[in-house]
Image 1 (cartoon, rainbow, N blue to C red):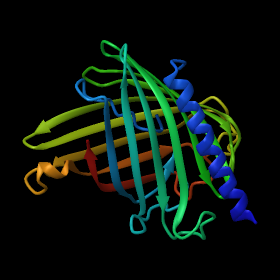
Image 2 (cartoon, rainbow, N blue to C red):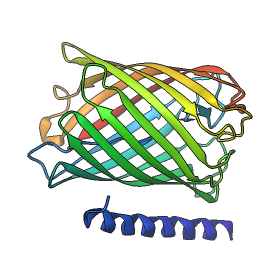
Image 3 (spheres, rainbow, N blue to C red):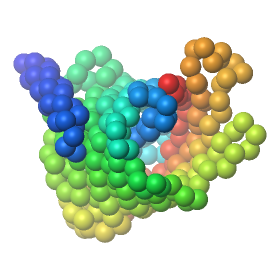
Length: 274
């Protein structure tokens, strides 16, 4: 019976997403990614096939992997971007969490399915986006609205207003997090290195079940991307090999359920741009 209820919620969320799509296309309006379509492409997209040592959700170590790097999760993601008139871009996407850490409420090894729809507007170097998300896991549905401001310059500063509309099965309540990010990229031969830094301020102390508000976590990362064109013919798409590591510093009064207050995470995966 629980599985049936969950599937009904999944179908309802897909329907809501489809309705949101219709509204967006009619002209009314991440942590999701925002794929910007090339100027000469009406539709573009990205497919990611990533293995992550941890599932970190806004500072929370979801599976409490702590210091371990040996039990990764598989996180495929697909996002499509549709170029609209007047510098607007509409996106649709989905992300999954696949592992055997606990019995799945969905079935098999599939622990979570996220879907989203977003609209972005770009003016010169500034991009403003709004993305509605539905995170489905543990027989429930967590609903999110992200508003992001990003500026295309040397340090690529961004501000994400992450608002939880419905906590679903999350170990916390509705609330808002402000995430300030910067990132710098360096090209060395065929390899592109990037160094993202994020700081998150929690406006609500009980977002992750904590007792305080303020700076909940900071993260520092190093990522590398290598195009696979010499190995995979371009006729099969634009493939990239990605790998990196991110270190998180968390406040245990704001994020109390992590086994480790500070932790190192690692990732490796393939990305296809089209």
